[in-house]
Length: 583
Ligand code: TSB
Ligand code: ZN
Image (cartoon, rainbow, N blue to C red; front, side, top):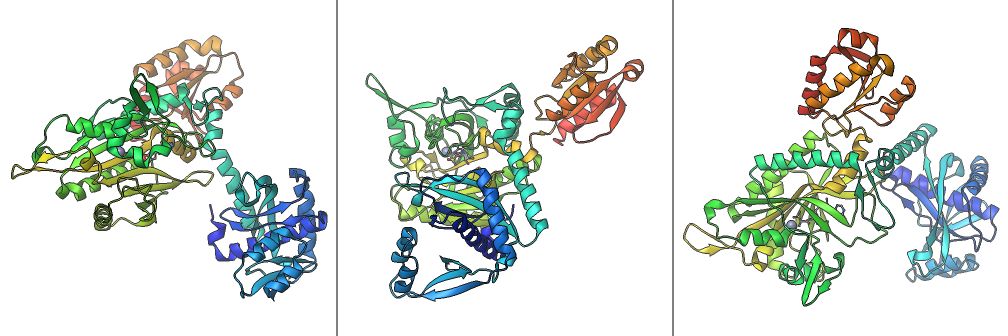
């Protein structure tokens, strides 16, 4: 979706539309006071103080009408330069504007924009007449605390959007509707993939049978793929002692993201937020020689993080997650090859899922944040320089972000955009010189000396939770055949005449490891076919006289209207090929 804020023309247009909104509100609510009206990625908003009055969705129609009137009357939009004193005089009845003016540097020229009887402080630029603001739409209204502080008064925030022409506006509104329909929380409910319950708590999702089926496929897929790449998988506990996390450094740098300590007799345990400490100890379980490296320890491991209740979001951001995790223990001379193999694994997985819209982010530390990051400039410079060099050598197109590293090292993150516009990390590959030190890890080099390995942390699917959220939004819930909870739905035209043959087909498909459903309910054929489509089942079989008499199958593929008649063998081959190729 287009980023309004970053598009110069649209930015100006939306900024002017925010003034138009305030102008109309002032006409309808003369006592209204205005705070700020910025342009955002999605359009514009204005925060308005109406005392006790609350604006409803219905009022938006009234405001829209008034805005249209101002547009039609073609008011010139004029820029005015003011001294601080003049500005304070003009806005003397508006405490919010006075607040803004008083916070402006002394001696600076203040600009305001005037259209007819309405004037507002603004840096600009703006369009030159209200006539150019014809193609706008008010989207919604919500409450917003003054200055974002929950101790302050609630203002009314009205959101809107403005385009140059009607087609662009219509297209954008259609895109917004599409995004709403793709939202994994909506689809997850409709397709019965996962659920939550207030008795369980925020950020704690339960995977329903259909969602669990998809997840099992994902788990098998990635485990098999990793095994082929030389990974060895382990199982380690979700609990660990506080001392384990003091050793790793999580206690000093990650405690705020962890659930509090469980005290039992004289023991102190925590739920783990990451699996690295356990895996460090797995490595340490026996001595290693330079010839054994790299050692790749993988685990599909549950982790727990105290995400703020306002930040949790469906399966995208949860408090209990399952990572597709691995830690690679490598010699310094193997860093490049191993990071490269991780990047290739990511690319290969993305190809299997047809993921195309993503960007690589090199996540670096914030030097000044001594609380979040382990304090060792030399180590950080080395790790960041090394990772940047590997990415450059790999010809990877990436951007850099300060303050996004892990506390133990820099990361290569793969960023995607969710349906509702969240920028989230899916895959990650991280370079770490710290944990080998903290756990005193060693291997014996060619000269027989004990030296430190380097650790690469990586998660390809990220977590199954976030990956599932992404997959639902990418596919709009119409999973490819290999992942679909129900792959084939059999509908007999008439139970009396076609049920026996349908049952025969059901057994045949089951024998071929196909997830099949036989819909033998006493419902109308049309109703059952429509439901099969609503559930986004890849193949719907309609079995009547012809199919029974010729021992064939007629199928309808999801997303197509045509019915195809084939032999049973051809159909099984089609399914097997499609599954194998992950089409
Ligand atoms: C890769 N120690 C490393 C690991 O070895 C680690 O934990 N990295 S992480 O903190 O970046 O998390 C790995 C992945 O988990 C992220 O890339 C992201 O895809 C996913 N993730 C992180 N937090 C959440 C969350 N709250 N809900 C769902 N998924 C999450
Ligand atoms: Zn890790």
